[in-house]
Length: 327
Image (tube, rainbow, N blue to C red; front, side, top):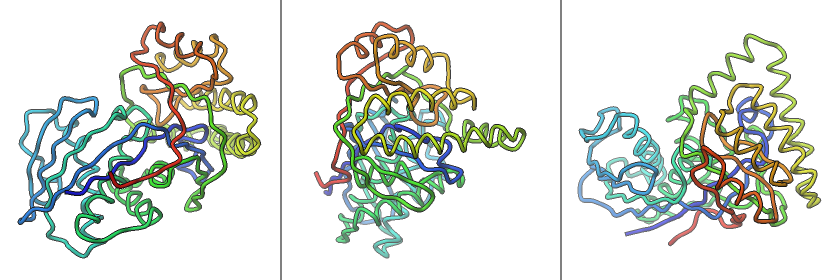
């Protein structure tokens, strides 16, 4: 058996705009998905999932998830649970030239599913690393990031960016602009995460922004403005200017709200964090529900979020400088 783990992430800046070639700056956090893989004698996949904000379940199937496994959960949960794993295994089979390789796979994660913390990217990255190593092939973190991006691209109907998978594979703070992905220097950041217990529909949210851009010229300008914030934020990050980072995060959230990807619960948490003295706060990820990220070196924001209606969990999230790794 081979076991790998990979971290989740928060976006300091740039979600949604990164889909249109603007830069984004995500940071890996010390919450991980762990994937254990063991080879089988046939070409079937047996996948057990737990701790993914859904009830654990096991499925066994052959081929792709186009033949939906017969399990007693909704189809959407099946796709959320195994779609990325199936795409990751296809990438591992391709990388090792073992198209008929079968696996028993167990996934555990302390990253909420679909909440904007990069759960799918972490699972995909860890699955590719574990499966290829189980077959005797070791890929570099850059190769894993590229293959994980291709897997997400397939699952997300061509709307994925390289940001999540590159950040999960390499760890730390990264800058992504189109195909240009690189690590950047970052101080230890006082990151606090608030979680409303929900999850947005990434596909619908991305499509909604695309529709706005097609209908209104100023919506396209809003996306470009997010890119400008990212460039300014990158300078503040490398200079360790957390106060400027916070101000720019506030601007970024306002523009995302204007693009229609926030929600009442996310806005409530953002304002609770700011009222508690956070340097800045914004949604992270696709939006529509899920998580916010705030900067606060004190305990005030975390405490305030715990008493905010609609917030189910709040926690401090340290920057994780290590990407995918063998466990």
